[in-house]
Image (tube, rainbow, N blue to C red; front, side):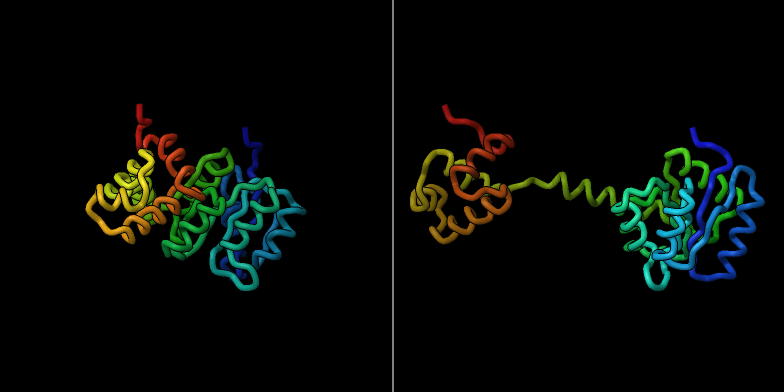
Length: 217
């Protein structure tokens, strides 16, 4: 259970916005700003010193930007939740931040009460996304699922692998499948690369383990 008030560090290179945000947060129930920084390098020092529950982190900053800062926070195993607060709706920024370990991604047009709720959710171990960027994350997950669902080997590569399992030579495979020996060699090379095998025997072994081919009686 998170202790209250939730202690925050605010990181943004625009001093006027940062000061205004700090004043706003300190007026919200259950929240308290314990430190601030104008770039990622300063932020790492403040986080280590103040040990906040949550850091509010802008993306675009000089010296060390928000994406690099998330990476450093996780590499240093700093026990802090990271909530990006930015104007950037760029897919690359959003997905990079999340992949590197950000716990949430909010846009600066967020309403104060929604910001408070998001901070509390993140402090308690949940995630938070602005509605405007949720679709980007869902599309990325869908594309990742499509990639994973694609077959590891093509139909022709499976045929070649089955022939390898039968102990056939390159010339025998070529004759059996009515293709040239050079084409067989190309397929074998692709099979070894995709299965991360060093030779044909290992490829057959991995093919059996993955259920791509079946053991012959």
